[in-house]
Length: 82
Image: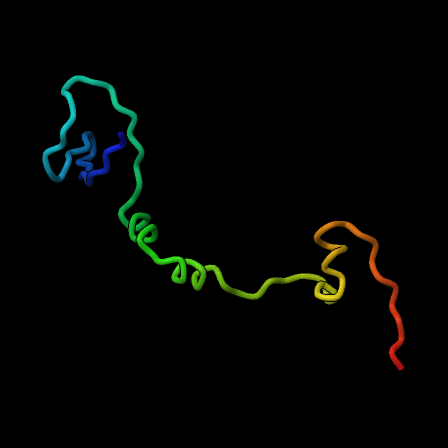
């Protein structure tokens, strides 16, 4: 089972901030993540969505021709509503 703990890198060695339950002289696979990345993981779904919001750039007829852009269907012919 994966274990997560914080550690400090002294330039040569990672030193756990607290005791860890690991066997000495065993090989382990280590994944490194900066604590600022961990802070982003703690965001709520709403925080994440708010971070990702913005203007989407697309063709001017995107709304009217969404099936064309999503599924490749032929574009509708322009009709006059007069």
